[in-house]
Image (cartoon, rainbow, N blue to C red; front, top):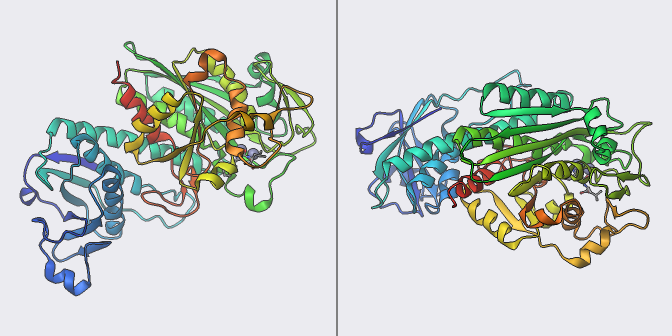
Length: 483
Ligand code: BES
Ligand code: ZN
Ligand code: ZN
């Protein structure tokens, strides 16, 4: 799909169809022309009405907030995808900022256009090829052309990166193994000269005493990989290190998951997919930030050599871990990866992980849990990622919950003694592996809910959503400008 900003009023632009957003059921707006048809079809400004002979598509939206525009664009895409419509024109709908409104419009189309149909014989090809955005505005706001153009570029990069992550997450576990993670990372570095990739195998993990990570991998026929992607522009202002949980399959291990819960666990690599997509987009955006993405890639399987509940593991950081549940494997992989990541001396350290079912219970399927020790960093992340449209909520640490991960025989237990507060106790476990000097620079994002939802929601399809990708990119884009 191509996007173009055209400095002409709508009526002077030629296209197969005109898209008109009906804002807050206001049917009196100058863009609206087909009131007779509205009456006939019972259209009151909500939902979608496509008048084929008039070549106009009306999409009702409640307001012109950035994410509403994104949702509206996705609705428009979905309404047209089965028609022979190859070009669409639309006015500018600006709330405060031309850049973000235009960016959201572009993102809505690209996010909605995603499909994962490689295993289907019948593939539906959408005809929509170009979206022409007029400089004419819905209201008195004048479109700042240059800013809107940046919005178009950024929207394409960020939405395509989101779709890139979805492809990784949706791929089946038979195909998407740690070695496939390695292959994709190497390919990314090959196709983008600004991204470097180092891959470490089990020998390196042994040498580094990453015994928590190795234990999780032990019963898998697929070897583990620690993948380190880096983007190091010359004039970088800050160094941001991302760590992604890359469980290409989580069966639960010997603490085996019940059948119903095991289904969808191909999505346990969503954190790894997200950090790969983030660095790809960061480079394409040319951000003046040094970015590193670390992926801990392994399966969690069963077998005669599987690690066991009752085992004690000595992690890379030297912290001993009592294994009380082999299904709490993500925190074990992350413990060693976070330790490795801190050697890079990050200004900001962010991990993304489908870490706990408890986070989904607490916040619902659509919301990421934001944890960490610094209120300032949590607030700043939540504020600066807001326009991405991704939902998140803070889950505050407290000392009472810290008691629950104490172990009788080791420094920490990998499973809390109570189910209650499971997302936070998992976060507190990770905190054990954060050195004092990085306590306030670390954020933990539990994306277990939104990373993979089995039904469509908003501009997301059933399956992977690329959770965390846009939130982190909006955050990075914003701190890139800080002094
Ligand atoms: N990958 C799961 C968490 C998960 C659950 C992600 C649902 C997405 C959807 C994780 O490894 C896990 O199994 N966590 C356990 C921890 C428990 C054993 C302490 C959980 O949440 O039940
Ligand atoms: Zn698990
Ligand atoms: Zn897991």
